[in-house]
Image (cartoon, rainbow, N blue to C red):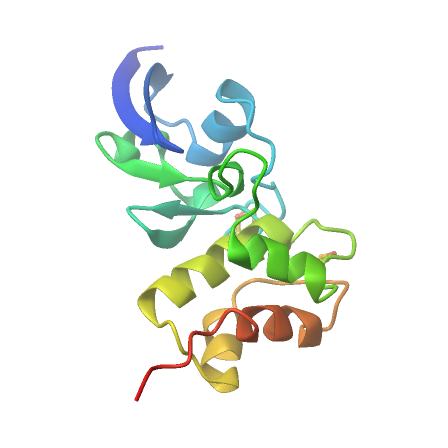
Length: 157
Ligand code: FES
Ligand code: FES
């Protein structure tokens, strides 16, 4: 099969790879890049366990061809921390008990990060609305919403 050379930035590092035109981004991240924080849930765009940030926007890696990220910047959950220091939203998920089995957590954390970047002070409804595509089978969402709320930056008057 013909391979296509692509170049992208993954968690701040330039990567170059030859891949088949029909290869999914999720497989490239998990198998070729060995970054298994990005989860394979449904594989059909229903659960958002595979959420990554592309140019800062939350996207589903199971629904994207890897060739489509040529020249783009991708962040996975492994790229949010600085060395051993977790990002504020990662720490908030721990502090608020928003992680149970943890399967949805990388996607939830990345979607929450994208929300807080777009809107540093979302209301509870805005948080619930933004995360409605990210499915959790464990926590009932209350702790997840509280984790995001704990990172809300109150605008200065
Ligand atoms: Fe991508 Fe479920 S694995 S949406
Ligand atoms: Fe288990 Fe969300 S913590 S699916």
